[in-house]
Image 1 (cartoon, rainbow, N blue to C red):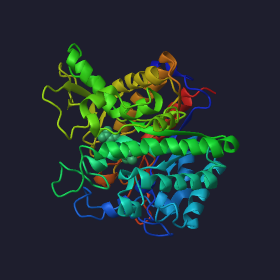
Image 2: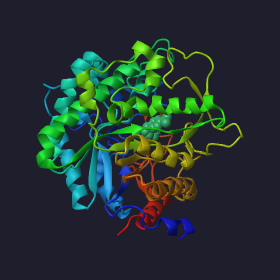
Image 3: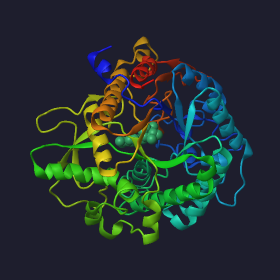
Image 4: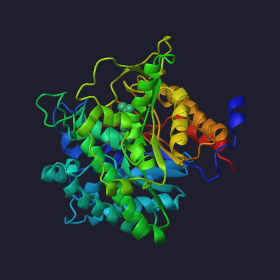
Length: 485
Ligand code: PNW
């Protein structure tokens, strides 16, 4: 043990959950079989030019077929929990409130849950990890239409609570509402691919749509949480919340008050956008209202009451940290970040961290503890770390160096170490940690080029053969030290 490991020994609570997180559209495969309907990603990835390596998620990791093998492998990694998402279109193929249920899809998830429980692994379930049924996009443009979307989402949520809630005690309504809406309706690089500035031929109005979709997510999260608490929680005794994405924004020049304000504004645009209505004032941050005016939707009093306090924990995904600088020019109509500029180095030339295979992602655990403290000081709510992880440079072809993934090991050593310090020294209440991710998978628009797994997958092999990397065993060893007995 290093002195730091000895110092941090047993700093996490005995019932701390750790494991891996995945998303249905990235791992399951079986995209068009066993009664499943199309999701927005099943259509999007078949449009030429949308996915970097022209791949699709038709098969991806085939975890639909190999879930038993996966649970066994996870168990060998020593996890105590597994976070996965349900594919709405596998459960209700056409998605709508009056559309038929696919019992085969229900059975798949039910079997997966039973397999996890039989192996002593606690399931955490995400209802929505970006794969809206395509039919709902075709019928009414999905979440752009809050009125029509609401009953469809609530029926889906109710069905999941009633069919799985006897065994699921941790529910997450939405994964990263902010990334979903900015990538899908601003940058347009994710489904449904709407953008008014990236591609002149694309449909959409990026100056308003991302905020409308976010509003729909917040309000329907509130409605689903209320439904769960009223009708299911009294007997099922589970907990329900939401997962937000947030990277740390650090001032480029710490002695420049404009940069200090810009970094705070960046955090409010990225995190406060959702966290303030959910855990804070009950409304969007004042900095957002000031810049966006009427382009930001307004909560009715009823919606405010519904959203505020609805999430019983703070689900946190974080991957990296950035340096942020004040911008003098007035904000662009398509700005969603608080009129800031983002840098890899600060004014003194200090780098934010080591590069990975993913352009935006660098190892920057120095910002993680600041982020945890920022959230904790503002909201004082238990935190579930629901995603954190990295790709590694050049991890393309199978080789000994890939399986000996030092870059990823050092990423986790840094991040999990900072987490333990935040618990031990800052008193932050953190109850779980899910690494992203269990195996290499289909990384959305990056296809199979970005490998986030602690398990290597040979995607050319028919059985998608899995090979453990060293980081899998590192996490097992590290958590066995950190979690108190
Ligand atoms: C998350 N960023 O997305 C998602 O929840 C996962 O499905 C995804 O595979 C994983 O992180 C890795 O990308 C993010 O630009 C996408 O900061 C982009 C960002 C963060 C998270």
